[in-house]
Image (cartoon, rainbow, N blue to C red; front, top):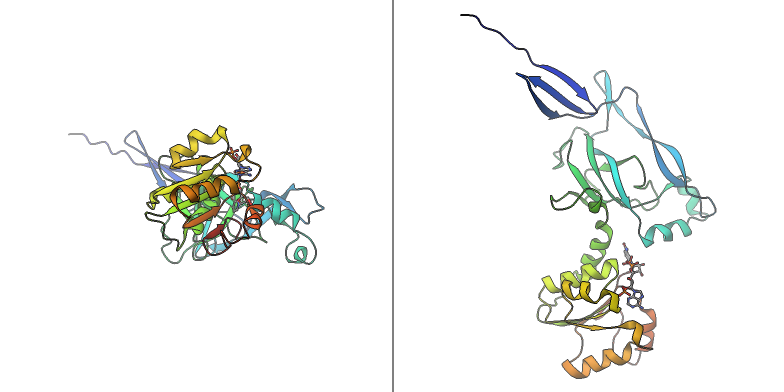
Length: 297
Ligand SMILES: NC(=O)c1ccc[n+]([C@@H]2O[C@H](COP(=O)([O-])OP(=O)(O)OC[C@H]3O[C@@H](n4cnc5c(N)ncnc54)[C@H](OP(=O)(O)O)[C@@H]3O)[C@@H](O)[C@H]2O)c1
């Protein structure tokens, strides 16, 4: 009887090991390694608010492992696929003035990201593996940004990192971390089950999540301010009645009508910066920081 032994051959392409055996291709994800101690990549950066944002070379310092280099322990290297910009990015750009510019003359832009894990440093189990598609919030306000080819996460302190759910594309996944995080923080500690809430700016990116969470947490009545074009969307998210802010000189009038109709509000979530609304209601209807929650705090 004749025996033939087929030996498996393998090839490594960008951190993935492909093994070909008996005519089939097997994929094993392994840490991406590098041949030099510095990973150089492109990123959008600026040095101050007077400096246009431009593409620069940025660097990540690697550590030696055998004959090659990889990321330091407990660090996670993510190859960025998509990044989302938010109002805070413009605020940070506009506040890049002396003396803050001394801290970082290569300020990155972007906090939201999605991408693929390419390498994980040795150390604790960080709950991720090479090849995972992840998204999250890169919380380094005076540091590097996500509009870059790579970001280096700290597995211990960069806690806002999630494996992308299967119902989101990798691009969609970059759009929600900061807005959802803001909406979630606004709800933190606010008991709204069976309560009446007012959401100012329900169609804003933050407001959409605030309304969805109010519904999820069991609010009895969700009154929203939004224009007609957002009517169907906001209703689908959970609004029970809507005030069209474009049709009123002051929304205080319809808000007070609502108070007359079905009682006072237990919580007001301001998702559009309604300072003017607060100041016009100084008469004692709402007090900021009490039943009033501002998306910018
Ligand atoms: N985006 C973030 O990550 C983030 C995080 C923290 C805080 N914030 C703050 O949250 C606020 C909203 O930002 P955003 O990015 O969520 O906004 P956005 O997505 O740009 O909001 C756009 C929407 O605002 C609505 N709008 C405009 N004027 C309004 C008014 N007077 N009353 C009610 N709705 C009004 C319009 O809704 P209609 O379609 O109904 O007309 C419009 O579609 C800003 O103050 C921002 O600084 C944002």
